[in-house]
Image (cartoon, rainbow, N blue to C red; front, side):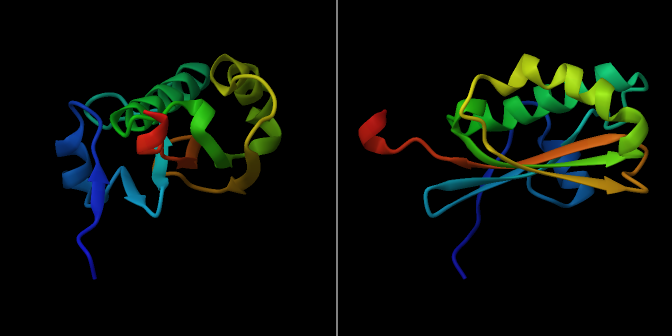
Length: 134
């Protein structure tokens, strides 16, 4: 197997190494981004839901930027929410701040019972910019 082409956002490599996963992997022209949560620099959850969703998007954008991408390059999104019936409206008020304009990426939303102390997580697949487009 070829060595994984890992992308680390600035200043968070120790957090990913401590938790034993890669924030993103480049493969075949795509960027596969691990689920991003609204964690503070030390990895603890942001307690306020709105702030937690914003921080999750900020963490996602840091990973995308480290790979030379933006949210406009995202083609597929999966979001996980604890108790989506009660938090969906609050989450979806924040999404347009980061989502951009149509056409939007594909989306799968999943309700879960546990996210390691978080209420929201977002993972994406993005198209990497090609050398010709640079």
